[in-house]
Length: 498
Image (tube, rainbow, N blue to C red; front, side):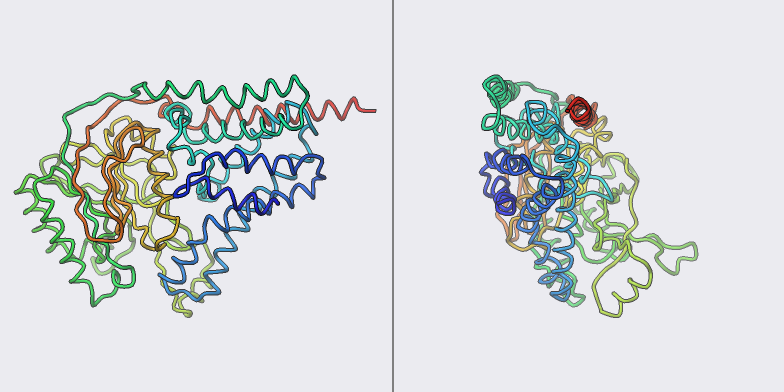
């Protein structure tokens, strides 16, 4: 039952969005934990998260085996390895719940248990580089609870959902007084959140700016082939020319396969032609750092390049900070890496960019940039919002085929726009390319898996919503206090028990 409830939780996320399951499925596990011994609770927690992440991240196999041509057994090892690690988090949570929290009562169901679950969700989102995928709050991008995001962030929404789960348990297991309290806890957040959608946390800071997003839709098995390089460059040149005249033109992550250093004779004429038509360029591209002798590259970066000489006379770079383990960097000993070379596994190591980097200025916009799944680390980019009036994310979800990964990733991007209350430009190799509004609405979207030039407008916005000022600390501090309160109450009960 735990495994099934965990697997069913995936239907709460995009593209299915049966969001009530984000309350019901955790409640099922909480009920299964009732009366369980620590070891039993750990096993139940393990299988719940195993079901969630096995079905929720199966696209890893597609990306590693089908797209990257890595042997199937290694792809399965990585998939089940990640799933097991994620399951271990909830195994630990189950043990703690059964060993140190009160055995029953309102304090357990409505305070300590939701707080402990939330703390673990937040912890796995940053510990050892973090994996924030499938955080409960993302399920609410299209409900009233999304209006809480500019105040509490995605983890604040997760907290409300978990309180709802605990309330369901209390309605089933509690006495009359506890059930009344649980009913209030279940309903009140929705009543409070509904009118918050009318509040404008940020204000327009300029006139609307015309934008274009170029989607090349290059198949992954062709994109990196040396013999197809000229064709890829030609496609992006042709599509970019179609967008000339818009103030900002955005190309996706690593849109051009060669590193920037080696195609300046392509980039310079492209920008000059764009500038002559009144356009600035923002493109995802790889770049290298050359040693002092000028004979070799010492570092490689996954970057975003902004070209607008009207805004600044220098090249503007954003270098990816949150690199993907085992694809963009390999935290393994040298002998393991040597083995990977022998096995002909495709890999490369990138250098991490600075955590805080200035916004990219182009076409009258100051853009807070992120690359690929970096947009999952919402609190890491709050510092940039002090001077950024727009968000831009370049990505390449083509690695994961037609599965759920692209829709989940897009849901994450929408949550970032809601939290920041700013427009987001999102450029994907084959989708989902879109312009997202400051309340998470999809202003314009390109059809997937085909060449397309998406045109729209965005309005720069300034101001800091409450969440941008405090980040996750308020919610996590309250969660920590709730866990401590549960520990203390359980200790006192054991101490006075006969």
